[in-house]
Every structure is written in structure tokens, then in C-alpha cells.
Amino acid sequence: MARRCRKILLIHPLGVNWVSGEKDMARIANIMPPIGLCSLASWVESKGHRADIHDCYAHPGDDHRIDHYLRTESPQFVGFTTTTSSFPDAVRIAAHIKKNYPRIKTIFGGVHLSAVPERIMREYRQIDYGVVGEGEEPLLAIMESNGAALDGVPGVLYRNAGEVVVNDLAKTRFDLDTLPFPAYEKLHGFPNEYPLPIFNYPKAPGTSVVSSRGCYYQCSYCDRSVFGQSFRYNSPDYMIDLMRYLKKRFRIRHVNFYDDLFTFKRKRVETFCQKLAAADLKMTYNCAARAEHIDRDLLRLLKQSGCWMVSLGIETGDPELLSRHRSCADLEMIRERIHWIRQAGLRVKGLFMMGLPGETEKSIDRSLKYVLSLPLSDFNLAKFTPFPGSPAYETIREHGEFDETWELMNCLNFVFVPHGFTKDQLDEHYRNFYTQYFRRPLLLASYLTMLWQSPDSWIRFVKNFRDFWAVKRAYAAKRA
Ligand code: SF4
Image (cartoon, rainbow, N blue to C red; front, top):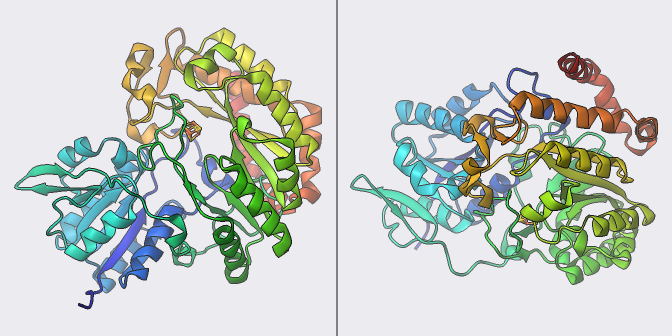
């Protein structure tokens, strides 16, 4: 029987993505494509339906485009992907849709809905259907059944006579190589309006790619509600075909693999590197890894195949605090691996956070000393945020004050203040950390080398210099 073609508009909500009251520098530094929505769009289209995407994050203030689409295209569904901080914006748009286009059904998915599904469905009547976990199969089932016969469809939430019905997650998961390539072309202005993180790439245009799902670890600060405790991945051939396609269709020159554990399956990465080097695509890439999943031979292969930078999640330089929050908290092993990465000729970015439960003045001090002793090429310090769904969330109020304002839960605001601090004190430590890191002459000199290593970043920096300078002055004024 022929399927009836249905239409969906997929929306990436804006959310509040910067420090409350300050200019949104996050959007200047990096606009990441909503890869999950691009993947869902190509998936439903491969099944004979039609999907379009509106990205409020890349195009804030363009809500009129949503109205225009709904009036002219009359989709049956609007789907939202939500993080904790963008959820309120998605609810705002959904309320507008239910009021003005009551015939359209709204579907919510993403990490925030997956973390607290029943609570959200109970409290937000603007949402007709919820999707927990991976979106492909549940979304297709909702679209094809048009809301009827959802009983037992894995991962779907709906209402029956006003009561929220929650279906269990699917027991088996499909092969990621069966997915069509994400529909990046559905993003208005792609790739030029989606710059990668500044100073994090050698050549433009670039974009992000996800080649695996899930993670076996259980760090206290990490919510794994969507993909769970597993690890599935694309084959090396799929990854290289996707890179080739991105180059041919969008002139992409650099790829940022946005996988949590890119090197987890060593054999896959080894084969990927060998095949990529042989394919001679003349593209570069970045990846993220856990320190225990790299070795010297693998780093050599990464370098030979075009890898430019490896990011390592380190979190804190205080060994006791680290061992409270993640397994394998060996800071000397991490230091050794950072040296290996540099010796292989790769850049290395350290990812840290401040304000974890148990943080003290002493742990911040130790962390700063550790960071300053490492040969990092780049560094990021997030403000710890207890996301719903993370292990830390369950007991967070035992360890300090927690302001659960979802809009502010974006790792850029201290919504959690551990015992022994005030929020102002934490903010002061945060500013001091960045100041100490960036004021070293050698570090500043290394940014000058970016003139030839990442000229596009410098062009962006110069274009937005007034905004960067204003942020620096605001920091200095707060510290005075
Ligand atoms: S932080 Fe990284 S390693 Fe830890 S659980 Fe999350 S994805 Fe896994």
C-alpha cells in the first residue's frame, strides 16, 4: 500500500545561550548545525515524507519565517529538539502554534525531553507527542499513524483520555550506516552561516559531523538519556563517503567530529585513518577523545590522515574532586597523553569545568595550577550545570544552592553554587581562571601563529573585535 506523504517542520529553538545581561558572544564564536534535525529530515524524506528545518539559533528573531511556512506549506506536524536551556523557547513557539494553527500536531524530542519525559508531558499541554531516546523510528511512527495506534510504539509519549502514556524504549537499535546523510542543505545559509568554533580549525568552510552514538562511561555531570549506555558507530567507509559528499556538495574543507568518544573503538579509527589518507580528500578534521583511548601509534595515524586538533575532557585538575565525578581520574596519565598529542604534531584542547559538587577554593587553585602546567593549545572552562538526567542532578541540593531556571542551564551561568561559595565568588574565580590562562606571553604568541594556521579565524576575530574587547573590559571591570 502506498504511503501517504506527510509534512513536518523541524525547529531548533534559540534558548538563552549566553550570560544573562551580556552580549551573546557564544553565537559569534560558534554556530553549530543542528545535526540531529538534519539527520531526522533526511530519514523521514527517505521514507517518502517531506521535512524542512527552521534554525532559530542561527537565525534569531526570524519567527515570522515559521508563520510563513505554516501558512504556505500547511504541515501536519512541527517537531522540536530541546536542550534544557532551549526548552522554554520551544514551548513558547509550540504555544503560538497551538493557538494559531490548532490542526498542527507538535512533537518534542531531544535531550531535555528524554531526561524528564513524563513531567514535561504532564505540565506542558502545548506538546502533543514526546519522543524519548533516538528519534528516527518514533517520529516516523507518529507521522505515519497520524497520532492513532501509537500503543506500544517504542520511545513515544502521548495522551489517552488526558492521561500521559509512556512507551518503553526500543530493545534493538538499528545500524547507523543505514541512515542517509544528514540534510545539511535544509539549513538556510549553510555552510557559511555556521562557523566552527573560532581558532579551532585551519580552513573554512567547515562543519560538524556525528559518527557514533552513546557512551559506556558514567560521569556524574553527563546526561546520557538519549543514546544510553552503549556505543554504536558508523563504519570508516560511511564516514569517508560523508566527508567526500560534504566536500563535493558544500566545499567543506574541515570536519569537526562531534562524537563524545571518537577513538573508543580503536580498530574503527585505525581503519578510518588509513582509508582517509589513501582517499587523499585534502580535508582536515578534529575529534574528541578520552585520554585512556589514545596511544602513540593511533596519534601518528590521526596526524597522517589530516587530524588537526584533539579535544580531551579533563574537567578539573584536582585529583580528589575528579575521582568523585568520573572513573579513571589519573591526572598524570592525562598529562602524559597531552604530551603525546603534541609530539604527534597535533593541537590539543583541554575541556574543564568549575563549580562541581565538592569544589573548594583549594580545588580551584589546584586545577588552575594543573592547567597552567600543561602544553595545551586551547582550553575551555564550563560552569558546571546539573542537567536533569545526569547522576549529579539526583542529589544536587545536598551539595549547595541550586537555581533550576532552565533558560540559564547552558554551562555559561553558575546555576549551582557549592557549599562554601557565593555565586559572586565563583564568578570571580572563573574570571581569574581565564585571565591567568590567557595573560601568558607564550600563549598569546601561539595565537599569533594562528595568522597562518587559521587565517579565517583571525578575519572573524578582527571583524568582531569590538565585541570581544567589550567582553574583556566587562571582565576587567568586574574584577576591579
Ligand atoms: S562525559 Fe563523556 S565519557 Fe563521561 S559519560 Fe559523558 S560522554 Fe561518556
